[in-house]
Amino acid sequence: MSAAARVLGPRLTELARFAGIQLRVANEHLSTRGFVKTALGTTVTGWWTPQYQTHVLQTDDSAFVEKMAMNWLMSGHGKSKFVGVVMNGWIEVGGKRHDALILRSRTADQSLRMMAYTPYYNESNKEEPWLPSSVEFPADQAVPPEHNKAALEVMLRSMLGKN
Image (cartoon, rainbow, N blue to C red; front, side):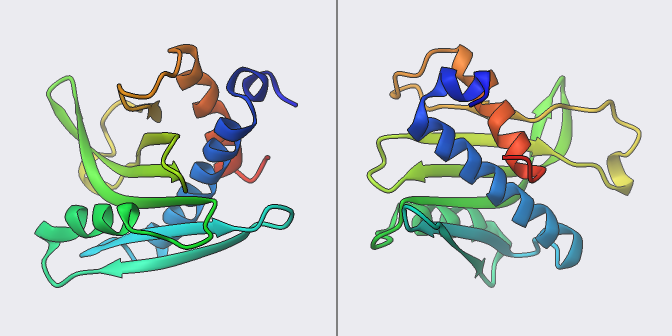
C-alpha cells in the first residue's frame, strides 16, 4: 500500500483510482474523437472484479454539455459502486485560459465526491507554461487538506496505468 493510499483510506483511494481510469479513457477519447458536444460518463460495478462501462453523452447544443453531464452524474445508476463524468472545458490561472479535462466522480451513495482538473495543450496554447493537474473536494465534505495531494498522486498513477 502506498503512502498516499494510507493517508486516504480504502474508499477514497478507490475513488481516486476510478478518477484516474476515467481520465485515461477521456484522454483516449480526446485524441481519437474529440469532445465536440459530448461528455463521457463512466460507471463501475462489482466488488471483486470491477466492470467499467463508459457512455458517450451527446447533445445537439454545446451550451448544454455541462448540464447534460451533471444530470447524468446525479441520476440513479443501479448497482454502480462509482459514477463519474469527464467534460472538456477550461480553467483560468493567472488571468489566462487553459484547456482542461474536468472530472467529477462520486461514490454511489454520494458520501464521497471529488473534482479534478487536468490541463492539456494543443496548438492554441502550446507556448503556455505547464500547469499541473489538481484535485478538489467539496466544502461540505470533511476531507483534510493533505488528502488533495494524496488523491492527486493516486489518480495520476491510475491514469498512467500504475495502480
